[in-house]
Image (cartoon, rainbow, N blue to C red; front, side, top):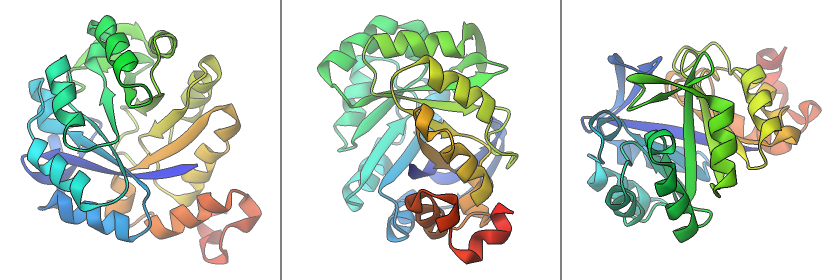
Amino acid sequence: MDVIPAIDILDGHCVRLYQGDYQQSEIFGDDPVEVAQQWYSQGAKYLHVVDLNGAREGEPKNLKIIEAIARSIPIHVQVGGGLRDRNSILAVLGTGVSRVILGTVAVEKPQLVADICAEFPEQILVGIDARDGKVATRGWLETSEVVATELAKRMTNIGVAGIIYTDIYRDGTMQGANLEALAHLATNINVPVIASGGISSISDLLGVMSLEPLGVTGAILGKSIYTGSIDLKQAIRAVGNGRWQDVPPELGTAIA
């Protein structure tokens, strides 16, 4: 399973939000490029970047930073936030990132998603951010009546490369991932699912890894690696081993 560090950019800073609330943001770095290089140096092979200004305002706002990140490290970078029209999607793909993440348009403009998937196969992910099983849109500021699992099915049918699932009530809370919701989603679609939100320990991470046979292939780590509750190197090592009994002895207390 892939362990994917997250970088959320707000006003040029690397931040973490609490349950998607822009009023509850905490700065963890003044230079997102340096943070990206830090995670790369610790063994990350993938990076998850969110333009929070873009998500709130409806168009990319941190393209220069995103491009600097993509050009500075030789790993896969996936980017979301404010990608609600073709020009915005092309602009982010033009920065050199591997994949883009579409959110609001999956609900509001599904034909655009289908067209972009056909044009850029394997480069389009859809982020489904849910409150009580319903899809939130526009930077988590609005909640639709669309059921997360039903949206995932529709997006799978039009060719997305994967789904990133975030339980908003778990995001930034360090309370663990919503394994039940992840399992339900993964068993209803046939593309990879990446888990996001709430993972706070190696035990949480291995809980997500237990869903790998269902199709959960990755886990995004945010606040946990910034506060030090998870050491990224150890997390990558633990998941890379792939079996509980192979987890390094020093992680035993975290798993017990």
